[in-house]
Length: 170
Image (cartoon, rainbow, N blue to C red; front, side):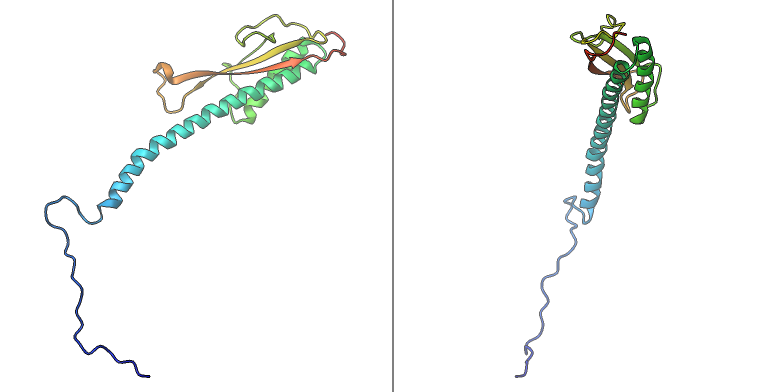
């Protein structure tokens, strides 16, 4: 079986001419608009995500610092020895999250039911008691100038420690 070609002349389809009717629509402008909108939308979105991650990293670090400080205090023989160990443990916990241990960090001890700024009331490790260990650290908000009042915020980590009731008083 032989294939025969069409005997008539080939007719090309209609050609589309470039727009030049003054409508303001040019060929190829969609990619420029996409890039412009991507920059306008994506840059602030990426900034917000990175700022939230930075704040969350600090929150996690102070919570870990409070937990480690509480464990260091309760495993010491005396409260004075435990307080020195807790200070070192809090610094290590901050360094573990990539944060520099700074002098702005505060470590306080208070009653288990009190809020974190309330310090005091704990100076010895009485068997069977509970107390709270609080680590407070001011952090800068990334990308916000320092002269604005919202440029810094404070994060607090709190951990309640139970002193074993069978340990000797110390």
